[in-house]
Image 1 (tube, rainbow, N blue to C red):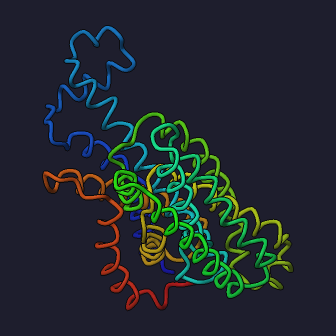
Image 2 (cartoon, one colour; image 1 turned 180 degrees about the horizontal axis):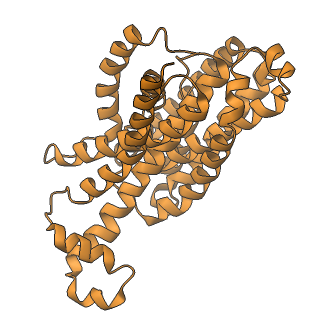
Length: 339
């Protein structure tokens, strides 16, 4: 790569890393209730300067601190988690069509949320059940398929079987559900951040942060793991241990994000493609840039869905509608970008 291309990729990488911050500031000022920029800044400062609180209208504090801030922070964290998970699994299995839900996680999570919403109602939040059954589904795939190094085909087929099993259980739960419970369940399955609060962040953010940290630390090894197992061992990698670490970390962040945001598709498939087209296939760069672009993508999608019409569109529907044409366009351009 010549010097000019390296410089342009470096500049592009810096812009991608700065994009979440710019979108966060913009999104804070977007909503059905308009807050002047000066009042917005004063409201945020009142978090660290108590003397300013008396000058900030209570309605501004309620909207910014209890509605917009937790929602935007959750969008950033969930978007980064889903994108990094997809990028890591694509590198691990050497296949650009792999996504973060390949191991049956989405169907397991949906079943867990359905159990909670239908049979426990408001007495128990759906997030813990969704997270637990997401992990159960992935563990079932790994136990049935065997070792991660046994091959992609075995994991794919087992993932399809486990997904079908949990989908059947989900339909069974829906059959016994009341109309009110079905409405709540379908709203969750569509993927949305409308009800995001500080409790959701407290539940999911530590798990997402732990998994993301591990995947970012392992990004140096993903270049080795993306080679054949024989080449990786020759380079000094403990293939089995490191593949397990990547899979478990990717599962952790995806399960945590899905448990609080519902099923948001296409993010972990499209974002890594866009990053590789922009900066190449070096996972040392792809992983952190996927985190930044994934966070930006979901934050932008959520901002559009809550401001586009008077009736808020679930963000999972929006990402699917936008993601499908984007992915079709990428298929024609990304053939020479992969590894």
